[in-house]
Amino acid sequence: MELWVTEYQTPALGYSCKISETLRTEQTDFQHLSVVVTEQFGRMLLLDGMVQTTEKDEFVYHEMITRVALNTHPAPRRVLIIGGGDGGTLREVVRHPQVEEGVLVEIDDRVVQAARDFFPDLSCSFDEPKARVLIADGIQYIKDHKDSFDVIIVDSTEPVGPAVELFSAAFYQNCFQALKNDGILVVQSESPFFNADVIKMAYGGIKQHFPITKLYLANVPTYPSGLWSFTIGSKKYDPETLSCEDEGNARYYTSEVHRAAFKLPAFVRQIIEAGE
Ligand code: AG3
Image (cartoon, rainbow, N blue to C red; front, side):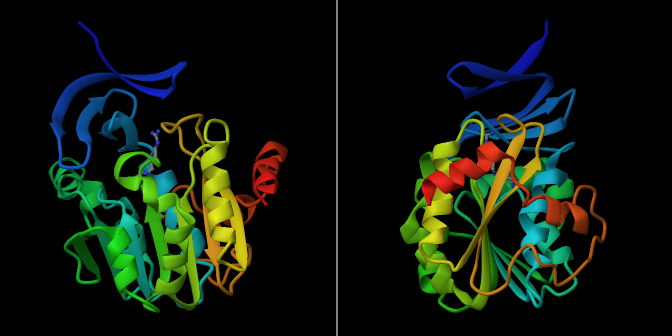
């Protein structure tokens, strides 16, 4: 008998992977969590039935959500990650030579535990001296830490369940205040094909507070439509101008990919222009 896992990316589209094993399936206090072994992409983490990451393609998302901001800011010493309990983003953050402290604030300890149990390549930085892993509500944490970070990365799930507020203009304002006066915010902002509304919300909300707001793209095979967006809000530095050409250990990110990622297809440009 064949077993398959399917994410309903839209009500009319299912994305299925053949699986050989289910390693964990549980209802946490916040969401449904499962870890399966897919033949195509290796181990896969799903939250509320939505693919969060897989062993084979995690590098694209994790390099691109971190390195663009870290190589824009000339001195990214203190970095905050909201969400990202699997650890992939934290791994990339603490790898950066200038980072002195990477703080991860994840609301669901079961995500962190699943990463420790099943994703050694993602959770490998949890116990490093530069890393701090806190189980707490990121929305409250941001409110309690003003003027504290050089870079804030919002590595959230979709705007359903625990993550809804992470896409609000009020939250972006709190991020603005938690950043130092030359700080940079970066958020994952979903698929231009299927989530134009989310992009408008994120881009529009960030633009209300940050003088420089830009969207960039990367290809993540296991995410809906494969084309994924990130939105940057910056107080001072233009993310299209690199302060550091470091490509250390990267498999997707290069300085050229960094620059090219901001070149948008017409339909994507129209989404953000419509939101302006
Ligand atoms: N966070 C963004 C995943 C969104 C995927 N959406 C979906 N499958 N419908 C990923 C967390 C990785 N650290």
